Length: 256
Image 1 (cartoon, helix red, strand yellow):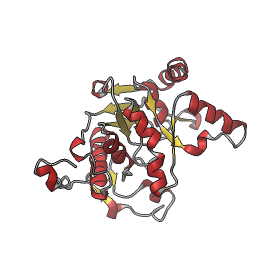
Image 2 (cartoon, rainbow, N blue to C red; image 1 turned 60 degrees about the vertical axis):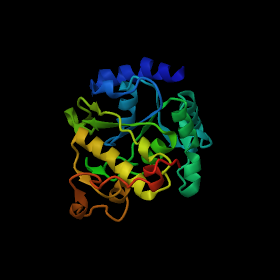
Image 3 (cartoon, helix red, strand yellow; image 1 turned 90 degrees about the horizontal axis):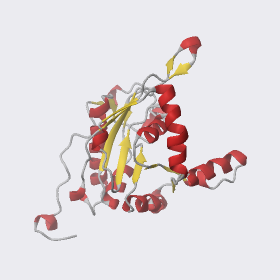
Image 4 (tube, helix red, strand yellow; image 1 turned 90 degrees about the vertical axis):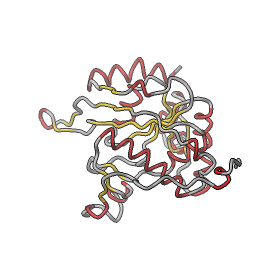
C-alpha cells in the first residue's frame, strides 16, 4: 500500500513534472512473474527515475544496516521508509554470509516479484560502463527468472541557469528478456557467473551505447585506478567469449 502511495501519489508526479522522462520498450517487461531488472548506473537519480516509470512494483536490495534504524532520527526515518515500501535487506559483508544474505531477495523473486539491480555496484565516475558484479547472475540462476536489461540515459547532471545542476529529459530503454535457464544449477561456477554477467552488461551496453571499461567502477572512483589512464582496460563490449560448455550429463540426457 505504501509503495503505491509514494510512487503514484508523490514520486512519479514530481519526476514527471521536473524532468519529463521517457520510456522505450515497456512491452518487454513481463506483466507477472519473477524477474531481475538490470540497469547501468550513471547518477544518484537513476533508482528514483526507474522506480517511478516502471509500471510494476520494484524491489531494490538495500544494505541491511539501513533497516536497523539505530543511528538517530534520520536513520529511523530511513528504516521506516524502506520497510513501508517493502524493500529487502542485503548483507554486503562478503563471502558466504553475503550469499546467505541474498535469501530475502531470492524469496521475493520466487514469489513473483521484480527486483531492480545495478550490477556495476556504484555510479559511473565518467559516464562510461564498468565491469558488472556477478550478483545479478547468481540471482537469475538461483531463482530461475529472466533478466530484463535496461539502459538509463540522460540522467547525468548538466549546468543550468546560474550554474545550478539539472537533469534534461532522462530516459529508460528496456530490452528483451534474457533467459539463462540452461545454466541453472551452475551458480557456484565462477566462469558461468562471469559469462552470464557479461551477457547482461553487453545487452545494457547495446541499448545505451556507453563505452566499456573492463574494470570495477569502485577501483576507478576510490581505488588504485583513480585518476589513471584507462586505455589498457577499454574493450568494445563486455565479454565476447563463447558460452560455457554444457555438462556431459546434460548432453547425455541426465539430470543434475
